[in-house]
Length: 106
Image (cartoon, rainbow, N blue to C red):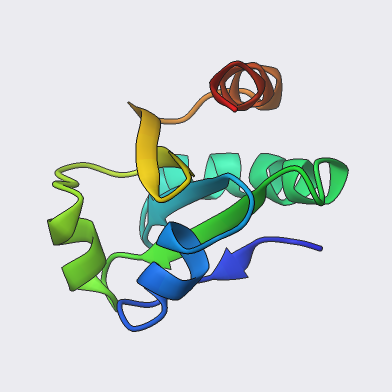
């Protein structure tokens, strides 16, 4: 399973009500650093299938979810566990750093 596209309308169902931890990537098509981490997140979604879900929220199409989370810059990453934010970070990072951050948080 790859990443899951999440909208303002599906945010609660896909993220807050998920049975497994969710990494939420707030991104936009025009964002260079967002495109840099995209492939790494896709790989992690496949490699960690069943342990986590990776959700991508396009901030241009879904401004309400981003505003609710207080996102001011992208990429902004949040880890939700049992409906609550347990960790967050901003900016691009190599796959190994993202994987380590996710594993340490869940």
